[in-house]
Length: 343
Ligand code: CP3
Image 1 (tube, rainbow, N blue to C red):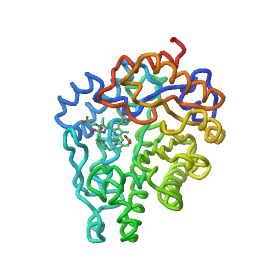
Image 2: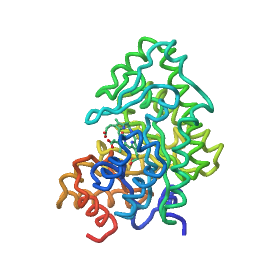
Image 3: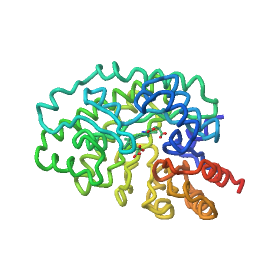
């Protein structure tokens, strides 16, 4: 029997939606914290195939999710292109910034990214061997706009101000960064697929700050280029796109990009998305991750609401964004039991 996630991605309406969770391997799990301590820091964990495989499997063992997502980070690609990258504990990522053509010209391209990223492909190969046969393996990358926001600012930003400023003030450099990221994301994801990733997800976490024509040009078009090139290299490869906080721009995103599934954040209601987005293809989402902290009857009610709202079409149950470190692992179990009709 084909894996449930693949069936949903192929457009099938299932009696119980398959489920996985963004950031399912993470700091809310004591076993993750133990392995991360063993690795040293976060990046050492990402580049250690043995330990990265272990943390990817931890939530599968504990909860039996229907999919595993490769343990890595969207910022490994800029690092592989030559940017400096480090993580400040409690604060987040830091990168050397790129805002001029001279800085852009120092970035690498083509096959050189694989020198840095080969341990990631090894993790994918190990996972394909280790996962239960019913569990789907998802590979991923950031979308060019989201990755560019970090490369331009050198860190996470609340409003992506530095990236918007570069777009306004030096369009050639901005476009060169987007184009380079688009090209190398295709190469990076192709190697993940060759190593055994069965589904690809493209994270555009900051798509919501692109408006009007900018959304078309810098969220939709790069994703379409990546989707179409991957599908021509790997016919039938299912792809999930996540243009987070796209709002009305979620409508039509399937057709505009060719993605099989559009992942929804929790700023749209499931009823609205069932009416406007799901008719065009599979949707993923969109329970607010705060329920993993607060739990209780509200978690049960809202989980049932999401399942019910999306029950007439293809749906993969997930949160609207990643689970946070303060979440209670028991609430995750309660969500899964509710989705699977045990509550
Ligand atoms: O979902 C998964 O479990 C797979 C692994 C994964 C991570 N990051 C591990 C991670 C995935 C798919 C990502 C994607 C990612 N990384 C995104 C897009 C998705 C999103 O959340 O919007 C972004 C924007 C990043 C960049 C990034 N990585 C930031 C801003 C941070 C710091 C914030 C934080 O939560 O600490 C990270 C660190 C990070 N990536 C952690 C994990 C498990 C926490 C690191 C730790 O263990 O200390």
